[in-house]
Image (cartoon, rainbow, N blue to C red):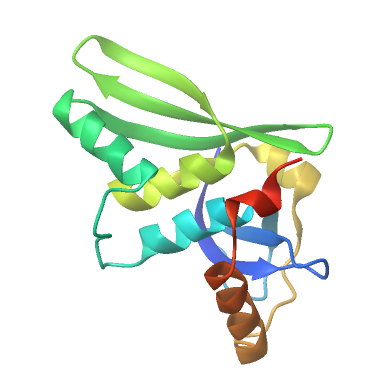
Length: 163
């Protein structure tokens, strides 16, 4: 397992949100990044978790954090464990009074919870080997991409994602 950080959120050419993970020990523009495509609502939840301003009412991941605290449980580990046919899988390991519990999770939910609990995100070596791509980014931030992503999140509607 490799510890990673959130290196960014972006929109791909089809305007689909992508969370980008990067090994902690690698600098920008070097090594690999791991892009994971997520839904618009999940991207908004991740962005909200990175924001220090609490929402007026708890969002789902804020509620999860509160429930863990109320049950005297804490997140021990967030891990992106495998990729199968293009779908990423994650696990949340909880330390509870009844012992450790491992829960299956979507990576977007696990990443969002990690931001709210201060938990380190881990990625299995073989996932990074299989789905990682060369990090050729430069330190310069593309303001147009940031603006486009912000506008997308402002106008996202749950009905947009119904099949």
